Amino acid sequence: MDISDFEWSDDVNCAVTVCDAEGAILSMNRRAREVFAAHGDLIGKNLFECHSEGSRAKIRHMLATGESNAYTITKNGQRKVIYQTPWRRDGRVAGMVEISMVVPDEMPHYER
Image 1 (cartoon, rainbow, N blue to C red):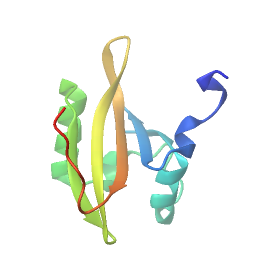
Image 2: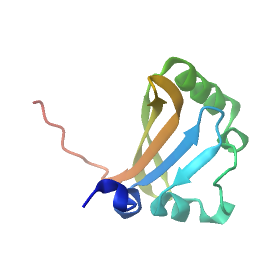
Image 3: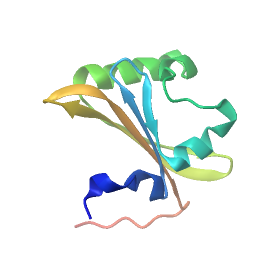
């Protein structure tokens, strides 16, 4: 089976949201749509409209430089890791992907 034959991202246990370089939301997997269901259908909406100025500045910086960003949050009693990284088309930053996953409060760390 070719991976392009199915929506693999709908069947992962994390929220995946993709936007273009102007902040328009292009794609949300099933989990991301569930997380943000109270806000309605966000495809086509601009993510800059629902973030603070500090967050908007960070997103603009990532889109301009190609740098990634990672942090943890606690939301609704769950600890989450948020990983944001630009995606590229023809070597140029074309937008950003955000992956949000629930993690345990205590998580092993290994030196490899």
